[in-house]
Amino acid sequence: MRQDYLWNEWHPVCIANEVEDAPKQVFVLGERVVVFRNEEGVHAFKDLCIHRGAALSLGKVKDGNIVCPYHAWEYNSHGDCTKIPALPCGKAIPSKAKATVYHCQEQYGLIWVCLGDEPAPMIPYLDYSREGYRTVICGPYDVNANAPRIIENFLDVSHLMFVHVGMLGDEDHAEVDNYTVSFEDNRFITSRIPVYQPNPDGRSKGGYTDYVYEILNPTTARFTKTSKESEDELTILVCVNQEDHEKTKAFMLLTRNYDLDQPDASFVEFQDLIFAQDLDIVESQKPELLPLDLQAEMHLKSDALTIAYRRWLQELGVENGTIARIDEKRNNRKKVLH
Ligand code: FES
Image 1: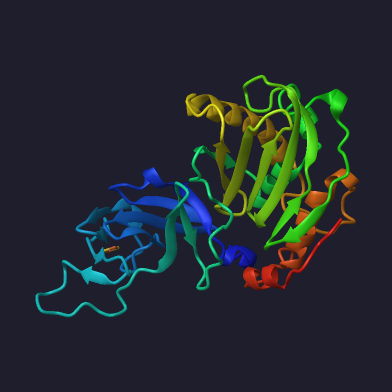
Image 2: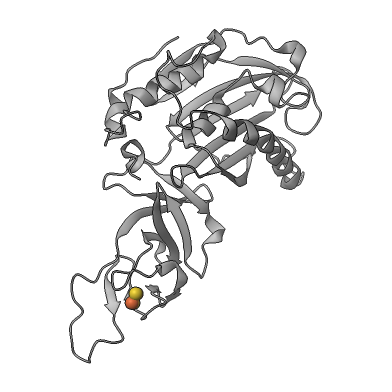
């Protein structure tokens, strides 16, 4: 599978502490990838040994090198083969003996992989280490759906009153006020959208909450919730790894500036419940690929944000898969207003 519009993006593949001593197999855009850690940091290779195609993820990390499980060829951080045990003494290692290396970095508690040669900038706007704030990672959530379906669901305001009734919405407060969507600083952002929420984060403190949504890239979005009644602020960032055509992993970074002394587990449990409520809906949606032709479905004013998302994906060439450089498109974009 080659999804060009995502090829140069960073994809969250696992939680950072899942990669310690042993290599780990992950999938990105249909590619089998191994991630491993050594003293220099984290690394991602194609999960395939050039000798006989064995999965390097079945091997081990020894002296900073990843060792193939089959005939123990060793590869260093740059993918160069440094040892072939079966080679007669004094024989040079062929220069072709290399692993395919991908870009890899550890950020925000996650491991990120980029398959392309020209990685997009890492997701900006994530100052989650601010004093007085606490971030907890929720997920990963396995979903049998395409990544844009998950992102669009996250951006969809008017489902809150029905799918999450009694928590994030109320059927008697289903109207969505008009709001604006603009493109600023390389991301889409909405004006404040007030939503009545009986139990917005599991603390049973109901009232009106203002949502501000942002789309940071095709597979990453965020909202920030505030209210006029308090200084409490809750941000949830969702980032989705398209593992293959039908399987995705969604991670959520939940950042709050209140109840910092309370256990994170209750916030995670609440988010797990919310995600489970969305899951059946998202997995049921047809067609599997988000329809980018706006004539294909019906739209309301309250769908302004998801319309902007679909239009953007269409500009990026998602439909025909011809786009290689998403960052160029992003930079060329000036303003989209509704
Ligand atoms: Fe990896 Fe032979 S297949 S060393």
